[in-house]
Image (cartoon, rainbow, N blue to C red; front, side, top):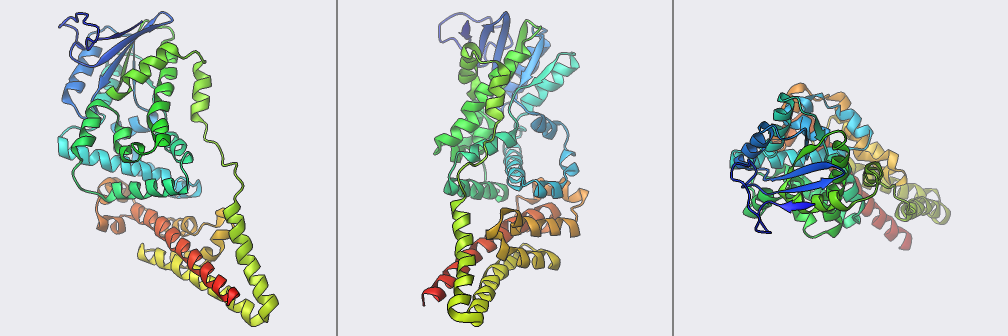
Length: 411
C-alpha cells in the first residue's frame, strides 16, 4: 500500500504528525512500513522535520540517502587530509577524485550562498538516530561507482564535455543559479551538481537518478529485516521512483546491487590505439625503408620532439618539478603505444613523490581549487593540474606529430 500524504487523494492528515507539511510516502511491504521522507537539501525546515520525526519515537530504524564516503565528508572534515594522492594516481582514479572535488566545491558555494550546508538534514538524521540508539542504514550507492557507470555510457565526446564541466565546476565561483537551487529544494544533490549534463543526456540521467532509486529500494528492503517501522530520509526527487521500486521490485536485493555496482570493462577492440601505433611504427619503418637512415631518424626525432616537448610544456605550465617535466618529455612519445605509459600519470606520480602534498594542502584543497591561483599554490591541486595539462599537451603533440609525419611521408 502506498499513501501520498501531501494529500493527492484528499485524505486528512493530522497536524500533530511531524511530517504533516512535508513531502513523504508510506509503503508497506513484507510486514514492514517504510516512511519515505522527501527532503530539500538546502532547507532548515527539512532539518527540523527530520529531527522531529526521529524524536517522535515512532521508528525502529533510520535509513539515509548517503554512502560511507559522503557521510565521512559530512561528519569528518579532516578525512581528506588522510588521502594518499599517489595511490589515487596509481589506481587510475584521478578523474573520480576530481569529480568528488567538483561536488565538494559546488556544495561549498551553496553553503556560502544559502547559509545551509547541503546534506545537513542527512547528517542530522544520522546524529539523531545514533543518539537514540537506532540502527542507521546508508542506502545510497558510492559516488565513485555512480560516476564511473555514468561515464561508461558516454562516447568520447560526452566524456570530454563532462570532464571539462567538472574542471569548470571546481574553479567556478559564480553564484548557484535559481534553477539549480529549485532542483535542490525538490531533488537531489548529485542531480543538481551534474544536472547540466544529465539534462541533455539520458545515459547520465539513468545512472545519476534512476539507477539510484532502484539501488536504494533494494537496500531499504534489507534494512527492514527484523523491524516494523523504518524512516528513510531521501531527496524529494527520489520519492516517486523509490516508492515504486520498493513496492514492485521482486529481484533479491543482492541481485539488484550486483547489477548496479558492476562497471563493465570496455569490450570493444581498441582500434584507434592500434591504428595509431601501426601508423607511428609503420611510419618509422617506411621512412627507414624508403629514405634510409637519415629520413627514418628524422621522423623519430620529429615525433619525439612534437610529443615530448608539448607534454613537457603542459607539465611546466602546471608548475611541475624539473624532474616531473623530464618524465613528461620521456613518457609522452610512448603514451600512444600503451595506456600504462600515460604521460599525465607518470609525471603526476613523479610530482607527488618529489613534492609530497602536506596536511595543510589537503585541508585547504576545497577552498584553493575554487581560484585559479589556488591550483598552483596547493600541492594536491598542482599534482592534478600536472596530470591534466601533461595529458593535454601530449594529446596535442600526438596530433601535431602525426600530421607532420603524414605530410613528410606523402611529400
